[in-house]
Image (tube, rainbow, N blue to C red):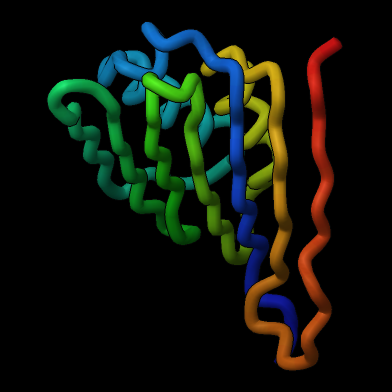
Length: 127
């Protein structure tokens, strides 16, 4: 089977707590990430937890983007699955810049490939 898409798993640390706990900021960031990634937004849902934390999911024609925040740890996790068209790495750049992450780890998985190819991992740390 051929490569059906790219799935990026993102961990990001040292983000400002006020951004991680702001559902409207998360909403705007998801919309901008989808736009920058060249994807088609079908549905967007953002939920504020109590006492803190936000989760957001964007359903795309090309698959999905999801983000989950832990303000108490200055951390968020996201995953982006783009099949076919789109540029998931551009969407990741938008997410990490908007959330002002200082440390980022991204794992990339090619989906639909029958042979195990492993995951490409790389990290970025702001200096």
